[in-house]
Length: 187
Image (tube, rainbow, N blue to C red; front, side):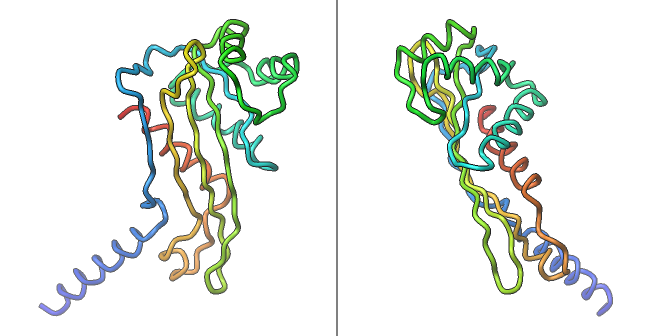
């Protein structure tokens, strides 16, 4: 009798511990009413704001979009050449006319813009990464935001800390967050 109760308590405790990760951090998302993201065929992924690792996260975002077949993506080099020809700095605001030219020149219906912040945190003797992202799809012909999502993910997990496991690395934290944010397009 006591053996069964101890197994149940131990099982529930382990489930609770492994459920104590940062993936439960709320994400916020917006999809414009009457916007049909399924009609978008091709998007341009613009350089992300946020410094050093933002260009790498842009690459990971392109991979996620293609791997999950959300949209076709114009080669980032073509996007960068367009920005150079328009004498726009990466991260500079895009006005309505520039968005239209982007759409016409590259044959895209929307531009994906993003910002990233990465912070190394510590709790006790454990250090871990926190990544905060905001992404938005802007329709090229209207300049309207048709989708936007923001969220934060962390490499910290109470279960990892209790059992001595290493926190998630930058790649895993970033890919998890990208997946969660892009999934809000489907809702």
